[in-house]
Amino acid sequence: MPLRAKITNPAYQAQAASTASEEYAEFKEQPGDDPDDVQFNTLYGVRTIQLNRPKKYNALNGSMIRKIIPRLKEYQKSALASIIIIGGAGPKAFCAGGDVSHLASDIAKNGDAGRAAAKDYFGLEYKLDHLIATYPKPYIAYMDGITMGGGVGLSVHAPIRIATENTIFAMPETGIGFFPDVGGSFFLPRLEGRLGTYLALTSTQLKGVQNLYTGTATHYIDSSVLANLTSRLAELVFKDYDNLRNRLLIIDRTIEEYNTGLPHDEPPYLAGNLRMAIDHCFQHDTVEAIISALEETRDGPSSTPQEVKDWAAETLSKLSEKSPTSLKVTLRQMRIASKWDIGETFRREYHLAEKFMSHPDFVNGVTTRLLHKPPTKAEWNPAKLEDVTNEQIDEMIDIKEGEEGLELLTQGLDYDKYPYEDELGLPREEEVERLVKGSERKMARNEVVDALMRVRDGKIGVREKVEEVLLRRCGIDEEGKFVWRG
Image 1 (tube, rainbow, N blue to C red):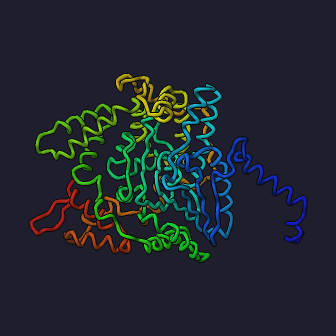
Image 2: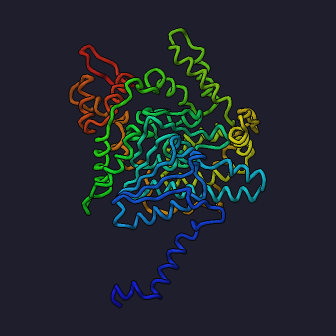
Image 3: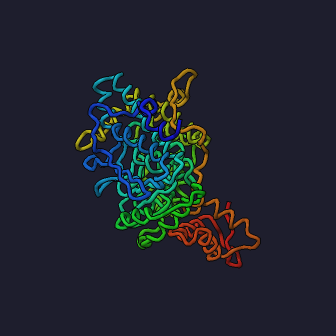
C-alpha cells in the first residue's frame, strides 16, 4: 500500500489511535484535573512548558504530570522540536514542591485509600523526573523563584539549569517527616565534599548565585533577560548530525551572551572556613556523631572563627526540629545512594516513599508545618534519635523480594554520573586538583585560574569558584606556587 494511502486509510488511523491511547492511558485526564495548570507554547524550534498554578507557587500535582509526560514524549518524536524549556508562572516560584498537603490530607481522611493514591502520585512524579534525566533533546530549566522538593525534580536533572537572583533552592523534606526524593538520592551525594549531606539533613536554602557555586545550577543570569534568552534560543538551528552534546554546548555559549555579571556583594557563601566545617562535621555516618561534631565546633576554642561557631549553633537548632526518623533514613540514603544509577535511584525512592506514607511522621509533619497557619511544632514518633533503630531504617530502605517495583518510561539510558556536568557546570574540585597536581611545574594562582577559564571559554563564575577552591585546598610554597593539601 502506498504511504499516502496507508496514512489516510481509516483502519490504519484507528490502529494508530489505539496504540497511542494505550501508550498514554496512564496519563489520561482524570475528573477534577485543571485544564489550565500547565501551558504549552511553541516558538520556532523551542517548546516551552509553563507550570501555571501561581497562587499555589506552582506546586506539582498529578494533573500537571499527566499533561507534561505526553507532551515530552511528543516533543521527543517531533523533528520540529529542538529545545524544551520549563519555567513557572508568576513572580515568586518556579515550583515550590509536590502538592504534599493534598496527599497528607487524603491519607488522614481516607487511610489506606489515601496511601494508595499517594503511591500512585509518587510513581507518576518519579517517572517524569527519570524521563527528564534521560531526555534525548536539550532540556532547560528556568529556576526563577522558589525551587524546592518536586520543583527540584523538574530541574536538577536537566543538563542546563539556570538560576537567577530570585532562585531559592532547598530540599525541605526532613522537616515534614519525609526524605529527599525526586532523585535527591542521585544528585545530593554527588555534590562536592559533604554539601549534599548538609543540604539533605538541614533543608538549608541556597539563594541566587549560590546555586551556581554549589553546582545545583549550571548558569546564572538576571531574570530580566529570560524572555530575550528564550527568543534567542528559538533562533538556533542545529545541524542534523549535531549530537546532544554539541547542541548543549551551542546553547551553553548562547546563554553566555546574556551574562549580566555576578552580584558583586555575594561571593561563594559555603566556602572557606565554613565549607571546611561542613565537610568536617557532616563526614560522619551517624546523625549522633554529626551532632557531636557540631557541638564541638560550637564550643570550640577561641581560634575557631565566630562565624563558624554561629553556623554550628544554627545548624544544631535546625536539626533539632527535624523528624528523627527522616534524619536517620536520609543519612543512610546519602551514604549508599552514590552507588545507584539514575534508574535504580527512582525505583528505590518509590519504595521508600511508600514506606513513609505508612509512617506517622509524614502526615504529622505536613499537617503541622504546612497546613497549620501559623505552623506549629510537630510531634515526631519516635521523638528521639536514640529511639530510631538500625532495624527500623533497614525495614524502610531495603527492598524485599516480591515487592512491587516502578516501571520507568525510558529504558537503557541510565548512567551513574550526569553526562554533561563536567562541561556545562563550573569546574569541580577534582578538576582543579588534577590541574594543580598534574602540571609538569608548579603553578601560580593566576595560571591555574586562567587555564580553567580557557577550558570554559571564560564562563561566568569560573574565576570565583576556582579561586575559592585554591584558597581552601592549597598551600603556598617558598616560591609562591600552589601546592595541593591532602
